[in-house]
Image 1 (spheres, rainbow, N blue to C red):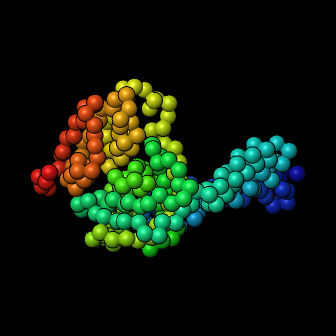
Image 2 (cartoon, rainbow, N blue to C red):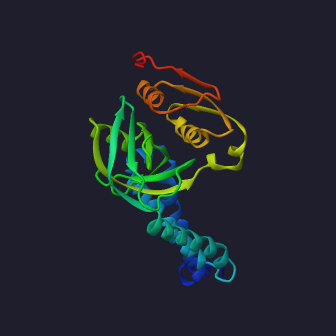
Image 3 (tube, rainbow, N blue to C red):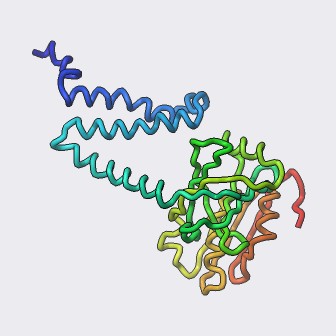
Length: 263
């Protein structure tokens, strides 16, 4: 009988589903973890292969129905329901978002809040630019803009998608964008309700702190900010457009060597 055990892989439900799950694992995991594959495959291909995890989960539900179906099925359907809510109620088309470069390495996106967009304090959104790539959604911190009922996203050039964005945006312009969210970030945890906060940030990572500064302005809370940045355009923009307040300390260390700040 042991000689025939190998046939259980394709002659039984448990064997066949287990074989499919094992075959799918490398296609799901390796393109997202192996540096060589990350360079050779585009983001769209890697993300598409990663979505094979949905097939993987469905196969595992059938692997041992009496035991695994509930362990995999409940999280699977919660995930599916969450995606449906995200697609139908949290995906917004911004027909005319304003794009502006801040120096050579950063881009600021400002837009009027679409209906039902919700609060932007300590939150993040997924951004999709159809004229850049219809299949790439990237997460960015969103914070209130200087204009009423407007929001902003600040993007730093660090990958293929952001490099293409910087090459496309050479002058201030208006283009369409899809915004999914907003979703609560770790900066909206109960720890942020303390009376005295110290935020330490570097580079583009200051955007969540900017959101907190705008949220806690004109309140009894005190936020102290320590920011280290080498991007002159980023420092100049926030110094000109953000009221850092006078209740807390704001220490900004400019470490750029390209040029002096223009204030």
